[in-house]
Length: 305
Ligand SMILES: Nc1ncnc2c1ncn2[C@@H]1O[C@H](COP(=O)(O)OP(=O)(O)OP(=O)(O)O)[C@@H](O)[C@H]1O
Image (cartoon, rainbow, N blue to C red):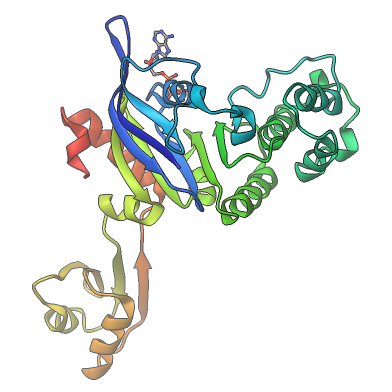
């Protein structure tokens, strides 16, 4: 579990992170989402003790990272995938890490296979593509079989197959009760990988919850209905918690009723239906709207919570 409480970081008169509180729970994959410059890297650096908060705190399983007895075996970290000795092979890079952190050397082969770098284990890491470098960085993060995985922009450089591979890997890891926290500014990729989201903008919390909670906080789900008797169906659907919009002579947009309920109401009145389609905005659209709100409102944190 990762907990940030009123976390603030200022560099001179620039505020990178402001009064940020959130919780990352074990057992699911949590995405940390925000546009460039939102404060994600600064938050992760404070999480792993590379930077000190101006005020507030961020802890891993109740302790500051620097107070953990064996941090690398507790928290697996990928901050910069290019931070490898270019002349060293993937195998030797991981072996050096294992030897300096008291990790059994057999684990090196295991993680190389886990990330699909087995066949190139003895090639120079300097010649790796960005996608391969990301896999090596993830292998290093997994080396200590940590309880908590923290990955900064792990999707960068991965092709669609790589994104699917990462999703399976992280979902499996989380399913074993581990905490997985990964940052990205790529919403569509993140929506494929994450269960929960923490969304920040300009250093502040904008939204927190499951992917579908975050999306429906922006735009509630609606149902598109096509029927030759649109006005009659609209009248039948009217209720206190339902909004029906006539889009054209045969098309309704209905908020507040499920497709199933609409089908039952239409059937009871013998109203024919040509189409009944749940509509949901994408995470990308929700994100654009959340960050637009953040610019428009002076105190965006309250706008969505
Ligand atoms: N060492 C520093 N000194 C001064 N300002 C900094 C420093 N580090 C970060 N900042 C500023 O803090 C803000 C947040 O930066 P940060 O790198 O945390 O954002 P980010 O969400 O990780 O962005 P990106 O997606 O581009 O990596 C930015 O305005 C950045 O310019």
